[in-house]
Structure formats: structure tokens, C-alpha cells
Amino acid sequence: MRTRAFILALVTAVAMSACSLEVSRDDSGAADKEPQTSTDPTVVLEQSEDSPPHSSVADVVDRVKDSVVNVRVTGIRNDPLGNPSQQRSEGSGVIIDPNGIIVTNSHVVEGSTEVRVVLTDGEEIEGEVIGTDPEKDLAVINAAGTGLSSITIGKSGDLRLGDDVIALGFPLGLGGITVTKGIVSGLRRTITIGGSVGEAEHLESVLQTDAAINPGNSGGALVNRAGQLVGINTAAASASTAENIGFAISIDQAMPVIRQIIEEPAEKRAWLGVSIASIEGPGDAATADIDVDPDVTGAGVLEVFGGSPADDAGVEEGEVITAVDDTPIESGNDLTEALAEQDPGDTVTLTLVGPSGEREVDVELGARLPD
Image (tube, rainbow, N blue to C red; front, side, top):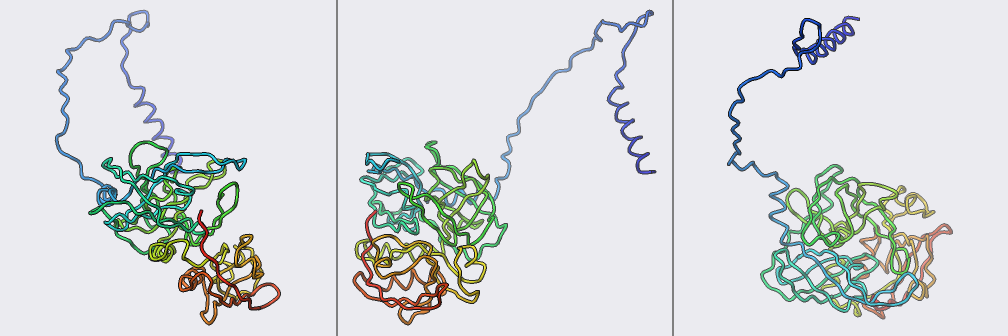
């Protein structure tokens, strides 16, 4: 009761204080309408000449912004009815080598006939697509330049939930680089995104962030507080279904694919033809809707592409690849690395575990198909 009384007394005092304006009245009690006169003081407005200290985010942006580029593409793409037409689009990219090696998303350069790379100072450079991996939504561009500002590549495996991250890119055709800041909202997500002509694509072990990622940010940089590249921005949840949910391909998952693209042209890389998810524990299998024993680990098969080597060999959706020849497979990344050691035309034996148990199939690997 004492507390309540104190609160009521305080409210009364504030109310009284707010109403303590003196009003002069004439003999009839009416308010005096004559304004009170006073000498106006001289008004002097001064603006500080001292620059405020910049935030640590601004310092990071200053270090890395010249490593993020605008990727402008002219290409042939199919409309929703499947009719091809020439289209222009824009995305983002990240310089990872000063000689002009740039990583971006596969969907940014899909069907491209011309690629132009625009630096933050406005310089425009012709680019050439070295190769792509549509299943991982990654592509590598070679821009004819030297002495470009390349970013420092970090490790996404060091990130924890709640760590600060910064997204940089060129969204919405605004004409300049855009910076958004957020935190790591989720780790090792598996998401499904729309592919060409409505086809679904699965991306595994992606980072989730609440830093705003908008159309045009695709292929841009997600960096940590040290300015190190930890992810390649790739997608955002639909504004009609969620807010502040964006995704980036973790750099740890991206690096084997990037190296493989650089070292071998697309047509010379072995292709299995499946979309996969890492199964490293019982929770992963349940998330991927794969019915296997809880102790099974490997690369879960989410989709088998029609006409692919895996399809020809009878690999089925819902199975888990646990070995390639004598090499154990304990994650999706293990499978990527194992296939990187093979050439088109090589035959490998896959060990598969599914609802009906374990089996082996021989697969003659194909060549990576162009977009």
C-alpha cells in the first residue's frame, strides 16, 4: 500500500507541475487576454566542428566495401511460360583474388551472354563466367583486372548464435553499395528456394541472419566484425510470410566448390546429379524428412535429377550416401570433396542407407551440365 500511495502522490505532483502556468484574471474572473510582454533574448545557434567518433561497423565497411561489386548480366532466360527471352538483371559479387576472381550466386549469372562487373568507384570491367554449380548456387567470374581489392576469407564454423554480421551488396538497383547489420540468427539451416521455371533447389548448412537481404543482394558478402568473409548472401524469406529472415551460403561450405570451379572448367567436372543435405545426427534426418536409423550419418538425397547419372543408377530420394568407394561420407561436404577427386566417366560405388536397409550401386559419373 505504501508503494501505491507513493505512485499516486508522484502522479499528482507531475500533474500539478504540468499545470502550474500562471494566468492573470480581471475582476470578473475572466482570463486576461493581453499577452505578457518581455524582451526577446538574442538567439545564437552554434554547430559543433568536432567530428563524432565512427562506429566499429563503419570501420569494417571502409575496409571491405571495395571488395564487393555490382554484377550486371544480360542473358537468355525463360519466362514463367517457358518461353526464352533476353533479359537484364543485377546482383552482387565478392572479389576473392586481386587478379579479378569473383564469387557470386549461380542464379545471378544463369543463362548469361554478357557479364559486366562494376566496382564501387564506378569503374566497369568485362567479366567471364569460369563456371557454376547450380546445386550449390555458386558461380565464379573472372574480371580482367589487376590490383583489385580482395576480401579476407574467414571461417563460418567459428560463428555462434548472436554474433554480429554485416551484409554488403547492391540491392534494388539503387546505384550504390548498401550496408545492413544484424546477427547470426541460425546455423546449419537447410532451405528450399525456387529455381528456373519453378523448379525447387535445396541449399544445406546455410547461415540465417536478420540483416536485411533484398533482391540484388544475391552474391554479396556477409562479413564478421573483423571484416572477414563468412558467407555469400543468397536468399530471403518472402515478406508475406516472415520478416528479418535472410540466408547466406556459409563460406566453409562454399570454399571446396569455389576451388573446384577454379581448378576445372564446368564441362570437365564430375557430376552425380542429386540435391543433398548433411545428415550428421538424428535431428538432421528428421528435418530433411529422411527415415533412417538415428545413428546414420552421411549425405541425404533430397532430390534425384531426371536423366542424371544417379537417376540412371537407381539412386532414390530419401536414401543417405554413407560412402563413395572406400571413402566414408559423414556430411554433404564430404560428398562434395569426394566427387571433386573424380573425373567424368569414372565409375564409383555408392553405399546407400534407406528405410529398407543398406545397399550398394555403381554409378558412372557424368560431366557437369551447363546452366
